[in-house]
Image (cartoon, rainbow, N blue to C red):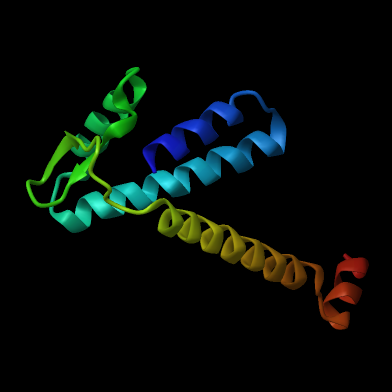
Length: 123
């Protein structure tokens, strides 16, 4: 997940305006998933996230992750923690849910009762 977050942030740096904000927000949400996993394992989120980010910025950092049993940041090279298909399913579901929420939010914002519209015109 950290590599996905890093790639999305990299893409955001090439954009401007609303598109950049959208990509940054998406990267933040993926980072919050990792932070939640870290906390649920019983590790210190701030320290662990800083260590993970530092490892993932290095050239050989892509294989670093959380060893939940030993409660440490470790090179997980060769150990499959979460199969790709599961992570892909999580991300697809998250994006679909976010899209649905945004769609509902837009409908609610665009709907304004008739009386409220008339009061706004008077002001």
